[in-house]
Length: 134
Image 1 (tube, rainbow, N blue to C red):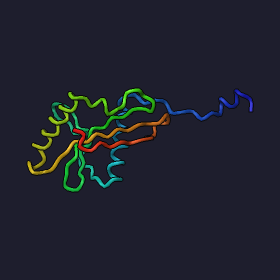
Image 2 (cartoon, one colour):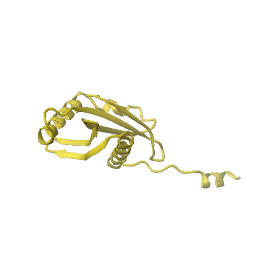
Image 3 (spheres, helix red, strand yellow):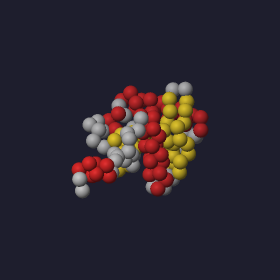
Image 4 (cartoon, one colour):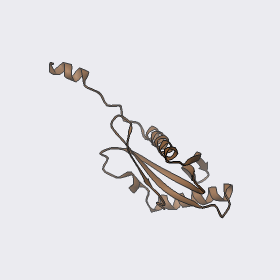
């Protein structure tokens, strides 16, 4: 087959998503992962005056606050490294706020981080779940 025809019929990769859509796709992938692993999703994108919790889920009797980080393969910085000390402090504050509003003090809680790595065609190629990350 001539070179120009090979280029014409070559499988094209999907266009990269903007930051917001990348986050939405990552959060949806994380929710599917959690449900598949026997978590019940309580709420997505819980908003409060000081920020947002990506996913609130339940695993047995434990309420799990989940921070989702998404990025494409071959990005030099690992997504979980974006959850620095400042972000961890904010997540603790948000989890305490939610707990005061909706849970009893005795309810077991934890904060997890899920990273979603997307392939060039915008499909999750890897999902890594860090339990008790904070």
